[in-house]
Length: 170
Image (cartoon, rainbow, N blue to C red; front, side, top):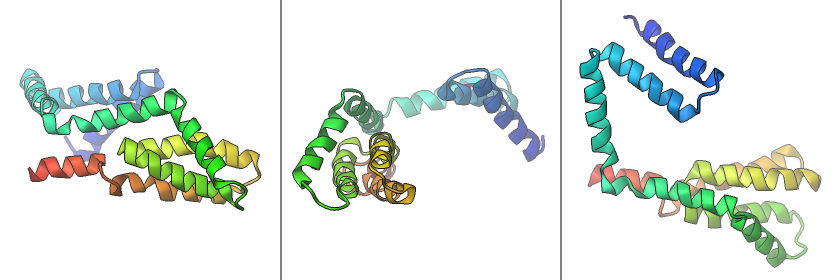
């Protein structure tokens, strides 16, 4: 099988399953199972996929990564994220361009808690962009601090990337 046929099979499977309403994670899992069946020799490939997956899932060193994501979700859904940004907003007073500073300070605080750059950027985007748009900020002035601060989660310990690199380095 040529590389473009394999790409078409796997990508087509993912796009089709997402188009019919399957969650993204399950669509990727189904594509992995189909890929293991086709490329690794049928039932033997599925067995190899399960053996490799079980070994990866049982490593205790990688446990902080899903817990970071869980902590970020709890932080967002309980409203603590919004309350933290409100507190920082009141702390800064009547500073010109205050919401940009609130975004940077709040994003830095959330990055230290979540350890996930994507989670931090998603929280900042869902909380701060509507508020900045409502207060008349231009789109590039509202997106800039969010993207800049979103990258801090990788740098500030404990980060998911640091846990992964430490696991690889043993």
